[in-house]
Image 1 (cartoon, rainbow, N blue to C red):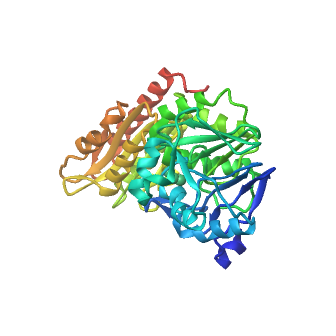
Image 2 (cartoon, rainbow, N blue to C red):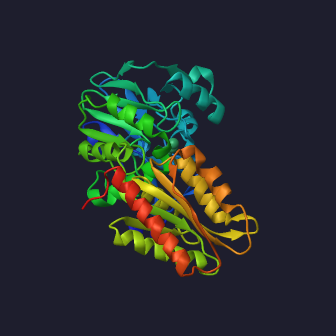
Image 3 (cartoon, protein in one colour):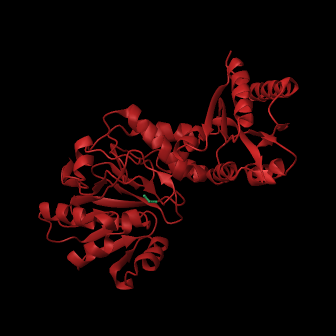
Length: 407
Ligand code: FEO
């Protein structure tokens, strides 16, 4: 991997994952930010799959437009003269961005997708109407000896998302769903522990806001015979149970005996509060993950939120309110919609301000129970530490009430 990064090679060799099914996408070893927001510590890949049936050829999704050349070279390497169908499971440009380039090289190909996705592709890529074949839920397309079936899977994570199931080979192409931002030249997952973390990060950042849809779509495919899950980011799963079980766990209603504390400290008061509170919680057997927002990779924070029972925002008062970085983190927590049950606010102030109101308002839509905040004037003194100890006791009591404290 290191050599590839050093050499700046953004390519993916053609690999056959099953008879006449090829991985033809691109590895983006060097990309470090997605949507100009999400850190990609391990790069990513844009997986595209070519299926050669006995009479027709289909391409499942394409790649980011910046890597069209990789996809086209891979198709050339496979000596593909004709593509009948370009299946678009998702309109987002990291998968659809190269459709126009593929169409230029394979002008008789038709883009096969659902009606919602078609309209998005027309808007985003300005593809002409006559290039589309619009399919409905449950439709299938024959490639001769192979059959593609379409399973609509809305809101994982856009309204038009769908899966394609290759019936004879029992391969499910899920696009973003179940994927991971992880650049690797290994076709299949080898190190499940490593990919578990990458997939959890991906789930936290992309899928967690759509937990209900995640559950619904897991339910939808539960009776499908699946040998391989080929997502469009990260390595392919030849042990589907691994990632399906992980998704079931992450999207379940269960929370762990864990407190997440995103914080900022300007002159040490809030840091002292966080240290003391973390110690008091840890002594009670509660796992604490605190994040100094001046250096935190927000993906790590998102991952910690997946199964936490409680979030405590910790901030000094800046001018009249919370530190902007804490407000930003609170906003992220709000939009990622973790399944937290409780929240609180701790922090410090010099002469006043509306930090608590501001943070409460930001986090209100999560509908988590608010445990009485502890806001301290200046540096924490003995009586303040007692209040923090009481807060830790209250959190323990709340966790105990929902049966997540293990003795
Ligand atoms: Fe990988 Fe929603 O795009």
